[in-house]
Amino acid sequence: MSLFGKKMRQSTRGWAHEAPPIEQDRSRWHPELTGLGPLTPDDVRNVAFTKPPLGKRGYNEDQVDAFLDRVEAALRDPAAANMLTPDDVRNVAFTKPPLGKRGYNEDQVDAFLDRVEDTLKRRETRENT
Image (cartoon, rainbow, N blue to C red; front, top):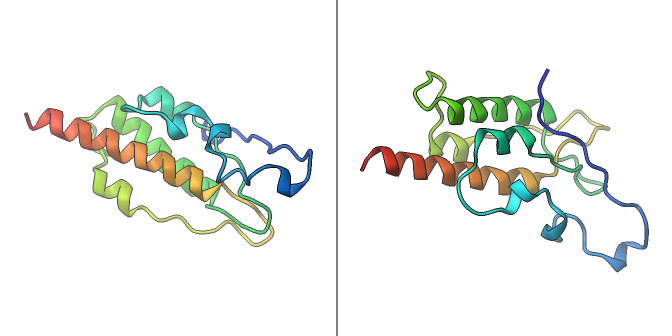
């Protein structure tokens, strides 16, 4: 059972034109998605993604959660056999959830993976100096 992906619900109050969609209003995103600096294993464990906007399916939650399990393990123990590289993060691909289901918001997952990639690049730079 994965500990990732706490589900958060988007407010349904108001009219669609009163506020930008969640993928455009980054101020409403979970702090780990848009913060600065390297991530910790706890940041990875505690990240939460919302559902994608209506009409979009997003990324398959199980696949994202499994990948984040690997990220957390790599950050906890960089010498572990399952260590990830920035290229692994940049090249990961997730499928859509089954028809009729909505997974994780793609923009939020991608923003978080950008931070993961940056964290791994910083670690590589530190190890090579």
